Image (cartoon, rainbow over all chains, first blue to last red; front, side, top):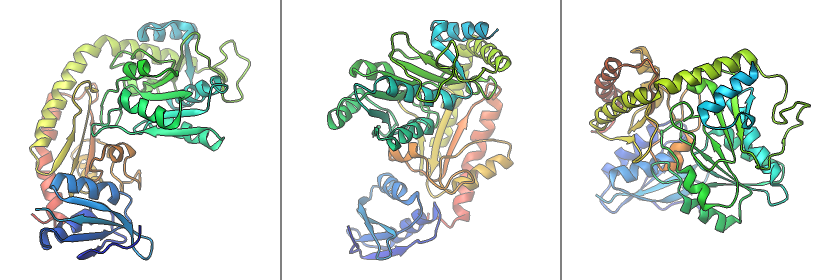
Length: 80
Length: 332
């Protein structure tokens, strides 16, 4: 998979856990219901924790991709 | 004297003495158990199946096997970290009949007890049981062809592992081996340490029933206190669990900071979070469960942990989590 088309992209390169998930929470709170946020993060825990956050917060995890520089990107859709 | 230690350990575990070998560590016993069963089954096949939440000793043995041309696949667990006979059967259907299946008796990180005997009944292959987390606390489950335990986990000395191989099980030494009466032993055993390990196991079993009941009530009390903290996941699997382990993860909390703060207050706890001093990768157990890996704490009650200490921990946790969240600028 390549780049996501997200409404908002959050750059968390170089940030360690739990920072990327805190930034994700802020970003999702700032978009409209139905809109998406792409979290770009190279932290080893981000993949597991973005999915866990979506489950705990009732938001939709819409899959993983890769930013142009190869850093993983996680797509989240705001449901509520 | 070594036979004395062997006899005591055998009696404590409900096995016969000729099935007991002392090894230089629990990890080595795991390696000998997994790889020795695979070597004994080399003509039948080369597929090792293990649960995805096995201890790294088992996973490393699997990688070692794979690096030498064998096949190694892990089997997914549920959200509680528990394996099921159905999942093992599905993996066998997908990858072929396994030569060996490796299942832990209980998970040391989240305390879930695995349905080992049910898995063993569901498969035709020999089952290796990593019993390191449960020996001295729970009886050895039925269904093992080989099993491993570690003395320091039951309060014995470090540097003593126990390998069990059932009679009539085909086991071959996967390593160079030695010219000993016991083909599974390499080099001379540490006799004083083996005796100390045997004495410690007998002592652990003598107090096991009462201690387990006390620890189960303390972990239940702690779990209730942690559940009251907002945005926190407590890993308390339904059904059988280790009585002395309680793990939980706090959303938006830095696991390293939480461990450090608890240490400052006199509580030595572990963490499965990444970004801690001991690891840059999150716990493979928490990740396999689909659990939150950051802000993770694992409380292991010792035999000396009393109710007052557990209550003090329950008392400080909510404020500590709140202050770490505030410090991190978490949106409320």
